[in-house]
Amino acid sequence: MGHGGMSCGMKTVRLIMVLFNIVFFLIGAALLALGIYVMVDPRFQKLKEFLPLSTDPGITKGLSYLEIMGIVIIVLGSVLLVVGFLGCCGALKQVKLFLICYGLIVALIIIVEVAITIYFVVFQANFKIQFVPKLQKTIKNTYEGPLALIYEEMPKPSPISLAWDFIMYNFQCCGVEGKLDFYGATKWNRTNPWWNPLLPVTMKDFVYPLTCCPMGSLKQNWNNLPLDQLPQAV
Image (cartoon, rainbow, N blue to C red; front, side, top):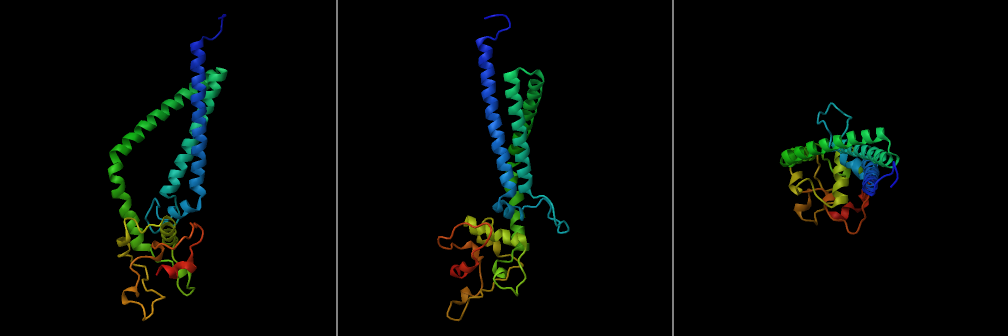
């Protein structure tokens, strides 16, 4: 090996570093795409309605927990893209400035990851305790049912109420923990408009929303509810 050459060991280290940072770059690109997807996909737009950061009724606009998650994913993806770029360029071109920036960012990422890990280990037990009651509260205080979309004389349901119907219909679920979540819904008109004396009295009022019910082989639709199919779920 001539003067100024690079040993096989150093070449191997540089190759590993380049490959490692290509993986970083690809992961960053994937996270960036995922974050953008979370921010624009219709199903997540429905979800964000009942995950606001503030439950203050005086605040009509603001970021939701879902949007915060999307922003965090976008930022993380962008950081990984930059790290991958700096690492690859620094290793291939031996640019000292790139390598210094790369080392500092990687060190910062490690510190943040350790902090996040500690946070989730300590607080994961409280996650369900904090969020389940909040979601159940949105059902109790805001759920109105989808029938107002059929009958023009009825006031239109709130975005949060509609979000629940979209979620339950598309995910074939019911409430947060089950049908009992709807027993305390204060704004829901439970009257069954399709009831007649030939039907059992028990069917005169809804016990749980129609969107909780299976509706044959209907496909998912995050933009429109199958209103014409609701009677078959009664």
